[in-house]
Length: 241
Image 1: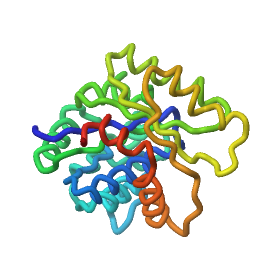
Image 2 (image 1 turned 180 degrees about the vertical axis):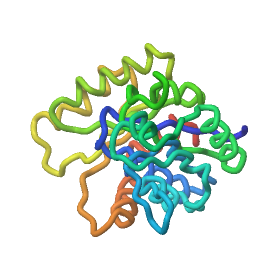
Image 3 (image 1 turned 90 degrees about the vertical axis):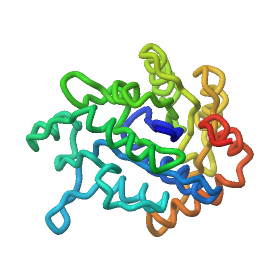
């Protein structure tokens, strides 16, 4: 296994892990990096033409320019939009960390860098008492934490980074996603407080943007981030430069 990689987690569900993962994948691709992507477990998959499809994995593959039909990019596809452990139980599926590890290793052998997007936050259960945090440890990947900018994010982000370190995981940095153009007081203070309290640098502040569709949004965000002063630090911390 020769690739470097990063495991992208969030302080909660709905904070924009997929958008951040896709932007970073597209950014690396534009910088000439052979990047692979992986969404190990997706619940809430739609059935299209007789097969389950992960919208998250499809977007990641589009951003990275890889084959969305590669089963290694999305090993576990589950129907119900609930906790992955419960969705797997309903589908009669056993989530096997060794199988996920094998898929990751195959991707790592084909790519220079692999982005792995988790499900929800670090404490989301996957199988048999094993959590998303255990999966990150199984893959031996450092974390990039996606946080929201508004009231409550300090507590949620500190809890996430503290828990990560308690479990022996390395936190490379924090991305604040969906930052408003006209921030309120809570949003104004969030980047500074997170950077000073979490023991990990804020490596990006991704702006809130309106777009016609997800592909347009990812393209616009990538262009904005590529020119941002923090981006060289982001690339350095995740091991690109």
